[in-house]
Length: 142
Image (cartoon, rainbow, N blue to C red):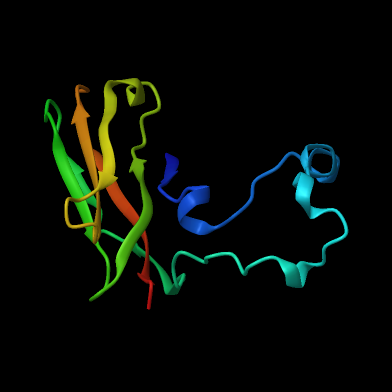
């Protein structure tokens, strides 16, 4: 059994600043030429761009069987009412590690409406596999 989660959030959508450590921030930060002698009150408040998110939840689909030879089986898990999908992933369950290389995830993405996560599975093995889709959902901009 293995798990895989693919985050959809980016620095632009979360407002997070990703960096290598304090030394990287200190060495890469530069003040504008006209900032000398000015205080923080002299600069406008940055635009937040969004109201964030609330009501975070993880939802899991029921275990879905993918038969031997089945191509492009789609497993979908939907968010709660009014929530948007932020990311998702899957878990593939089997008792046979030898044939795991014959099961392929061909898609792992949000649906077109942005309120569910879809997993596409192709099973080229001789045994059935169980698949669950996971979604991370929240109220966005409320």
